[in-house]
Length: 309
Image (cartoon, rainbow, N blue to C red):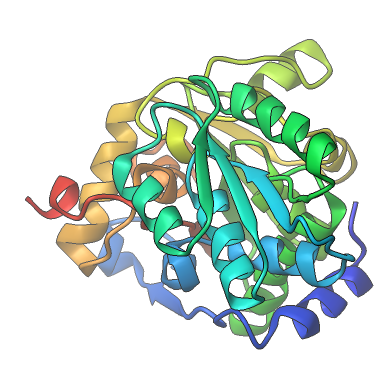
């Protein structure tokens, strides 16, 4: 797991390339809930998700060979790696699963990266990318199970503690677990983490039930951002070390939260980006009466018409 010093070093390393995203505080009158809620608006990050933090830190802390960088992704991580490669003038190859939205594939290609379809699910794309990396020597930038990537994601926690130091609980969406593991590595035991995942791709829930990272379903409306085959080894170790309540949600609750963000705040979020908030708005997770709850809105890479139409 990354240390707090790793995360501080990552913050300094990536600062020229990422945004310090804002927070937005909602009072009980705004939400109908009994507690204040602070949103960390990471959907405003460059490329529209939190992913560039980890991508830049992995690349900038590594020796990149002439072959460049390579990654597998349902979309957001691939776009982040492709964007970082473009800014750093490196070659990039991105492997995506077949169902990846065309809009995400186009944005990756617009950076100048090569895009390849590697199977129908993320796991197939990951295996194809790893095989290609072994052939070319390119630097593999894992979506969620590399210490340097997680240290980059942990800078969200570092920022958020400065912006909202009185938070008692923090809700994050979980797929492969990189966002959760990075933030938890910063806060450690200073905050209560709530891990929210769709019931159609419940990686941490399955791992908790079996006692180890185990293959889980990879379907549903948020699969392009949260549809890892299994929880990452580092994320599972983080959960065992620092804990976290797990909440599993139906897709319709995620869609309601996505629409709530637009109707009430004019915030566009993709389904994965609205997943953490859905646990709170739906009542699937109920905060203690004295809580101040933080929620990471982690991505906005969707067709706006699917939200605002």
